[in-house]
Structures are given as structure tokens and as C-alpha cells.
Image (cartoon, rainbow, N blue to C red; front, side, top):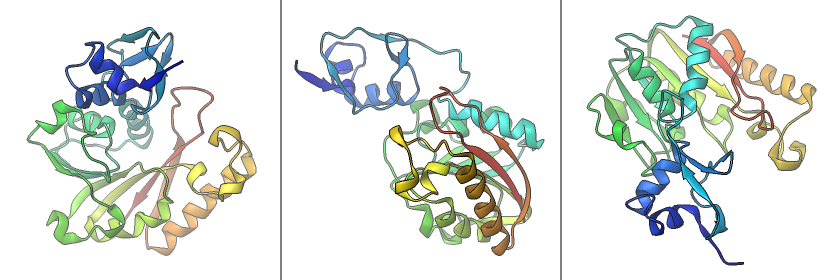
Length: 243
């Protein structure tokens, strides 16, 4: 059976005006096959599969907004009037939530391109830096110190990103980082489907990140488990740091 990328198929079937718009729909979590949400625009499916576009009840452009909202509420962090750097913006779930929570403006940084939701690309409060590796982020890239840095990165250890953020924080500033055990343990310690199930390994990762942050001069303040869109996905944890 012939299969094709779902973003191409959406455009061919007239469900999206272009392939780029189709990618945006997928990344925003609005494309479903049956009851399953499609998460990646490059998955291949049969052309005759039934695809549905539905606006979700999620009040943000991506599920990341739900996750960060949970952490911000747990940490009691006030975003109103804050200048923020968001590392790993992707579709913009974090960015959308923070703007709706009163952030003054946000530097949205991502290694990819054409991922940020169109509504955020047009928002003057968003300063977009695409195709940008945050490992090498320096003060001159933003030109000011900020109140808060949020981090949600994949396929790289958080320890590669944290050091670059510290010179960009105002005194008394904070970092909210998402710890993903699947990208912190060795590749041979990740189970089937890329899932880390061993609680001991997860606890080891959390302790390792805590210790690393402290060596950088950060004050570890709190942590909370992130909501999961699906129970079969990896457990992830937000950590709050102070300077």
C-alpha cells in the first residue's frame, strides 16, 4: 500500500492550503487519525486513511502551554510584565501561554524553522530567532538581561543548555527548565519506544541535574512532574531555579 507524508497529504486533500500550513496544523495538535492525535508532520500514512482536523479544547497553540501552565501555577511564578527567553519554542505552546499570562515580550529561540504558530509569528511581542543553537547563546544575541528563561529541548541534555542562560538573567531572575530523562540517560538505558520506566534512573537524572545546576551557581527551588498528553509517553519534570 502506497503511503505518503501526512503534511503533503493534507495539502493534496485540500485540508490545508499548503504543506507549510499543514505542518502548522500538525504541530498545533489539530490533526487526528481516528482518535489518535498526529504529532509529527513527516509520518507516512495510506492515502485513503480518514483524517480529521479538529480544534482542540486546549487554549494554546500547543500542548506545551498546558504543561507550562501547570508548572507556573505550582511554582507560583508571576509572568505579568516579564521579559522572557523561551528556548525550544517549537510550535509555541509555552510562548502562547506566557503571553496570555501577561508577559511583556518573549525571545522565542529554536534550532528549527517554520515551526512557530502563525498567530505568534505575527505577534509583535514575539522576537523570533530560528535556526539558532541555544548552546551558543550569548548576551549580544538578545542585548538585554531577562526576568525568566524557559527551556524545553529534545535530543540534547539540559546540561548543554543551562550554562548559556545564566549570563542572560537579571539578578533575582528565574529559570523554568523541563527535564526529560530520555535525553539524559545513556542511549542503552532507554527502553522500547524511547521510554524510561526505571524509577531509579529517573530519580538519578533529577539528582544529577540538581547537582549540575548548583555547580553553575543556580539556586534549586522546586520541581513538579509535567502533565502528559498520553500515559504511554515519558515522565518529564519541571525544575525551578533562581539566580
